Length: 286
View 1 (cartoon, rainbow, N blue to C red):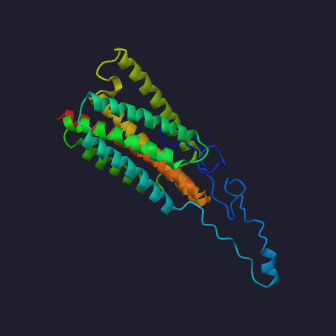
View 2: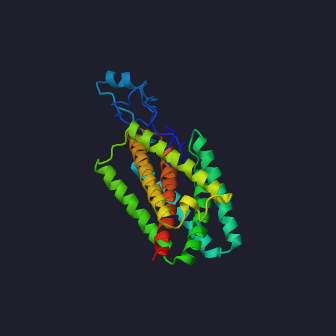
View 3: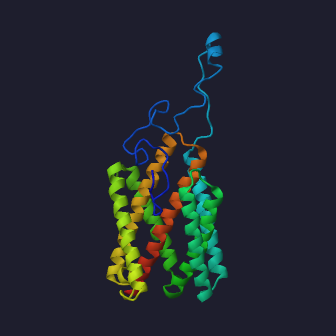
């Protein structure tokens, strides 16, 4: 699968169809459609020996499969790297033209690293943590700039991000949202259309055709766009949750948990940035 977060190109954990095995259930013994179905122990040289001595053949114990603990640990490491980078940037880089330039540069480097990882066939912890570090620097400067004008906005944005993420997880686990191929197709199509519109809006603002940020203004229209972007972030989270479930169910290799952490981090960064802008918009209207 390609998609499940703003990069739209991270592959999924199973390829029974185009959407990470949505609408398919893991089959006992790793079904034929499962990319991890090729069990290297299928031809057990000791199976006949077990039968010969009257003992039932034992299934091989595999320990190199992704678990929820793996996802949690690697997500904590990746998000922790983002947090450390943000705190250091906030503490060491005062708000200035120079720090703004560093923030833009860090964002570009993070974007390049994310693109490289997204098109790699295997996860690279170095690329993922490098992305997290540079993204953290960007978020630190970005948050400090907002805080200098709207005091407390970053803290409120963090709380808002946690609330959206927690609510999305609860809704997903309760089964109120079923991540199917059709659901993913429609959501990704809407997300791509949104990004195209935002890119056009950016060009119009850059050339002076649209004023005050256009669709991304700090007014009612900007607030509506921000709310829509946060809802898209929640949509990305449901795809991330589904991919993690599929990865564990289908016995994905343990290193795939880095991809899960990578996707979750990008999605949470997306939600935080949009939440920070939304908090600033509502603070401006007071």
